[in-house]
Length: 270
Image 1 (cartoon, helix red, strand yellow):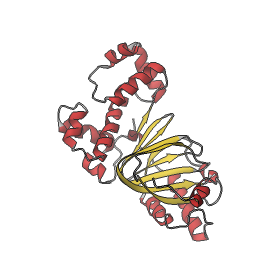
Image 2 (spheres, rainbow, N blue to C red):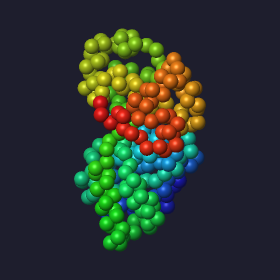
Image 3 (cartoon, rainbow, N blue to C red):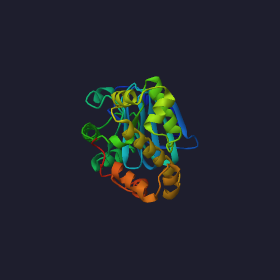
Image 4 (cartoon, rainbow, N blue to C red):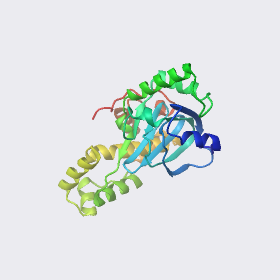
């Protein structure tokens, strides 16, 4: 992200008016943005590449056409994969009272996209005129009702042994070890691993492991890696098996996802 001017920084760090500030973003030369937080809520969306938001609760992945929501005061960092362009919206603390209280990836409605595109032309931090204020109110209503995309979140367990296993699989999603073998390696019974992993992440170990592979697939695809190479890097025996997994989770093919085609929400429900 380019370094914003002092004027823009001051505006986005004020928690009060205006209700909405929108600025364009791009990955620039730095692939990562250090851990930080804002007095306002923040909504990201990109047109190409991949943006990953990291918080203490886990990782949220944003391919083109999706948006990431960060509530006010939430410590987070960001990482880009591939050339990335898009926008960031900062929402006043008062308006955030009716918005989600936890980080999430949501679907972008066409109405919200259109309003934000127009809002990027407004002077950051300047008072909103009546027409702008009405559009900002509609945008916040759209965000309030936005559907969460569960397939693009990867919550991290906190218990030491579970976290050890999770970090090992993130480092090598193609790790061939079974759940039992991983449990023995980490010093926990398979039964305890199954029970506690679901308690801490909200998903089964098998489901989490598949989403970890999906996360790595999105990173590789956004950097231009061919689909066949991604499939074999992640341990799939065939490209068709990888594409089938991808479609099962995101409702679209890898190629469509990376070109910004809208996701159909195959895995918004577990």
